[in-house]
Length: 104
Ligand code: FES
Image (cartoon, rainbow, N blue to C red; front, side):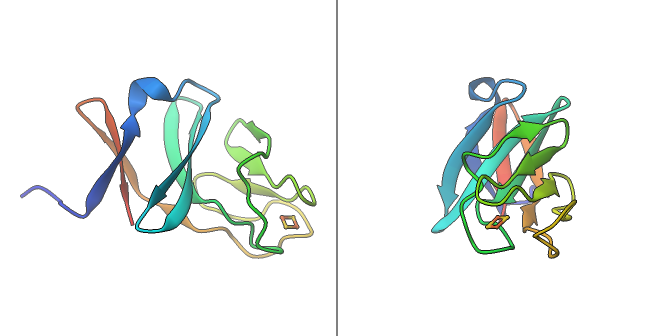
């Protein structure tokens, strides 16, 4: 049976390796991040002081908060360094026929 709980987010072609795209699903701001050949979806909200992560640096498997520099693993949301100690929210992602889909 097809899992209909995924929402079409963006064409895979529109997100190059190393790219970050800000999207919104059900009123939730989400970042699609393509790193190490994989696509990740994380909430566009830092766990430290709720700043947007959208303009942060993204490197092999992590994204940094532009406000105070905390880094988070894209796969798990885990905080890698202070001042953040809590993880950010992550969402399951799949690619179906060239379309990135996110499960909210
Ligand atoms: S708001 Fe992100 S590290 Fe402070």
